Length: 127
Image (tube, rainbow, N blue to C red; front, top):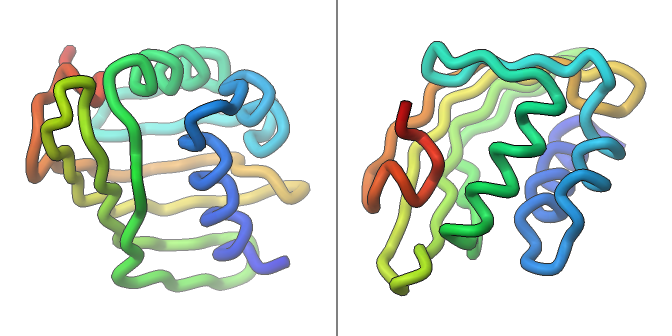
């Protein structure tokens, strides 16, 4: 399976309404996972909590992928997650991110997320 396909499968699984976030993260995210998004660093345990909080406030309905470049075990992507908050208001973000993979799991994400529509609290992006 290509890493591009794996990445898309990860996002589909993690944002599916009835999934167990912890189980999905443990399956698809390397034990040494780390991310830096908008300068905020998280490890795998912190990321699980982040996803749980996001899903309490919003749902991702689809992700539009604009550009994806894959080389070896690295992926660079520009994509647009779209969804609704609990008040049925639209949420849309622009994500520019670099991913590295190890053992068919995401090892590292480094990127920027810009909210295009919606409230920062709904997507758990407030500091």
